[in-house]
Length: 231
Image (cartoon, rainbow, N blue to C red; front, side, top):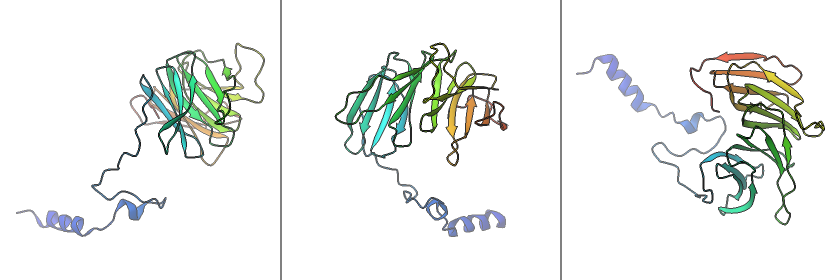
């Protein structure tokens, strides 16, 4: 027979009616406990490993990057391809879309450059993309802080700021600012949702660093993980 304390705990759990839905701050309707979400669409079209998915701000389209050398823009409600963006290097690592009306999409990979596309409308041809040079290692991820302001992270252990309105004419290094502090290659970057100046980076050294535009020193260093930080 279970001890009284164990019996009391079992009774408390059985009577507890708290659910994830009741404590959700976002107000979203969550699936009932034990009910798996259903698959709405399966998007097929890539011929290599899909390494990145990014929603466009209209919530109807998303961009996928794969190691077949292509970025595909999908119309999510129908599952149909809207556009195909062929990359010069097949070893893509990400596609990151600006969350505003600019229609910008950044891609990068093992060729050490970041390519910025202006996604065409349905009846337009794709414009020649801008190629951002300066990193000395693969470009692993990117995030738009604001329209025409981009942060990239790289295997050269740095993050870089790019001002797309004021790119220098030099083809060697077009970075507006470089953020160094991690000991190993960077693999993740995230924008502060409440600020266009703050962002966080994650590295294979297991650390997360918080940064603000205007300073090349991190405002905070978090060392909790013991392995690579991927996202």
